[in-house]
Amino acid sequence: MTKLNLKSKIFDSPGYSRDVKLSPDELSVFREAITEQWLAVIGESRPDLVPQFRDIGIENYHQLAQQLEHEKIWPKQNRCLPKASCNRIKALPFLQTLKDEFGDFAISDVFYGDTHEVGREEIYWRLVRPNAKNDVGTIHADKWFHDVMGMDDQAFPPGSVTVKIWIPIFSQPGRNGLMIVPNSHLKEWRYHGVPGAGGMKPVIDEDVTTIGAELMLTEPGNMLIFNEGTLHGGAVNLGDQTRVSVEITMVFPRQPS
Ligand SMILES: O=C(O)CCC(=O)C(=O)O
Ligand SMILES: [Fe+2]
Image (cartoon, rainbow, N blue to C red):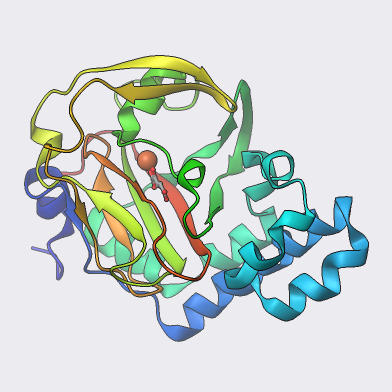
């Protein structure tokens, strides 16, 4: 048995783990890489504002966001870290911890809308501003996305199994973060696909107030690792900072035994 017993938590019960934490140095690598891309994207439309955004920091993004076309400038492709940053992240110790637990895996390719960047690994981040309902999506299982976007034929080899890594980079425990429905990967849930800004997206056809979603208490760096069938979704941010988080999809040729 591996040290953290992650395989059994993710594939058996409860369908997720919160056992793995980034060290302060690892968290700094993420913060620096994200901040660099965040400022570069802001600089593409408003180079004059870059010094102000740099001064307040990404966790205070919402304080100045009204000066930008927020809805336009953050499509997923502007939030996928460049290759050099991905390579720095891939050398961090937490990935070795995951390999020790799960065995070898690949990181999924960059995929958004109808674009599949073959061979470019996807490590992307998101911004969730305080009290912004549109900054969080509805409860879903990631395998629903793979299904409605047709990714299982295109992005993943037949029979492969994915596991998600969600990492809070700036978060306020109890006030923002990710909701998870424990053991939801063991049941079937109804949903349908609708067209969204970044391609097709799934919408749940269940009463989300009664399915048992729990807000996970996560300090920055305390990652959540979950089954592709586990129901989850962003909580509306009730904090006073912008929540910044990262997503990485591990791809296994088949379920690790
Ligand atoms: O961070 C969020 O609000 C949603 C994250 C999510 O759906 C995921 O990590 O798969
Ligand atoms: Fe998700």
